[in-house]
Length: 217
Image (cartoon, rainbow, N blue to C red; front, side, top):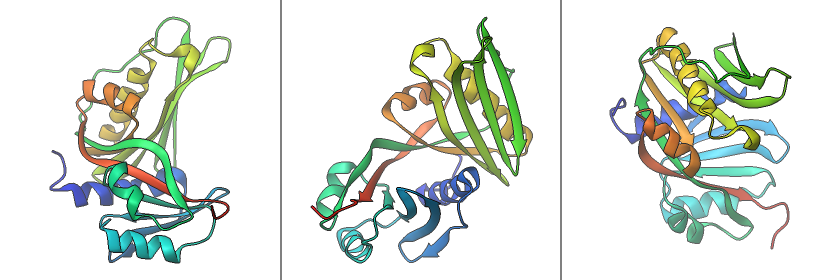
């Protein structure tokens, strides 16, 4: 494991995610972090390293604004009964994953696709499109010193099972390694997890989200 413990991986993920998404700096709390995101439907988020029942209940009872999110490192069946009324699970089952980063041979997309990368403000973005301009796959990575957060990896339905996700991931991790990062962390969906495991990433914790509903039920 490239991090000493799960708490260290969580911290790296939180700080790298804010750089990747252009969110405010995380505010440390006794139970984790608060991040102002500033988007419709995602105004802010609490990231709970301590998600025991009393902590979750207190935060969800006191946070009543629509567009507030929680991110926790417990499975959905553990989080759901701890939520106050007006909150529900969101985002589906997820996993926090880590890997040691090393520069590897460059990856090229299959014939008919073009690869482009660019870096701005510590974030490298990768775009794969067809030769006719259709978006096929994308992703980004934020480097924060020796750690990097891989984020928003997506291969669009008409272009799946052509190795494009692997191309995006390898290009991003090579860029992060070249920038000096030695450890990577990401939040994965079940489908993404299968790809990342083939590339050497390993799960360190479940990742479960919840959202304050627009209206009380």
